[in-house]
Length: 59
Image 1 (tube, rainbow, N blue to C red):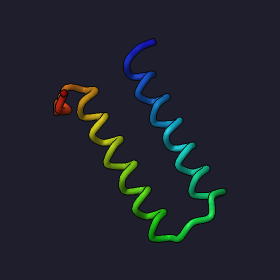
Image 2: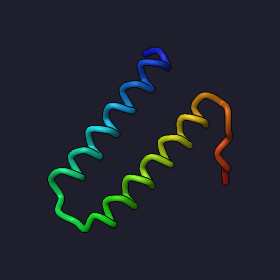
Image 3: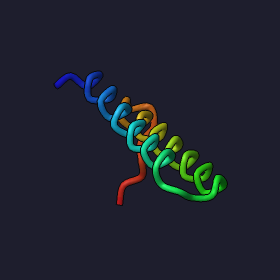
């Protein structure tokens, strides 16, 4: 599988999971906002690491 297809599939899966959580799991709107921000930041960091723009710290 080419890296670009892999990235697109991961973004689709993460988006669908986030949509399902936001749609079907009842929680306060502030918690949903925090969850959305955390997921978006994690995906951005993963994308930057995936393309070699930023290296995630390793242990």
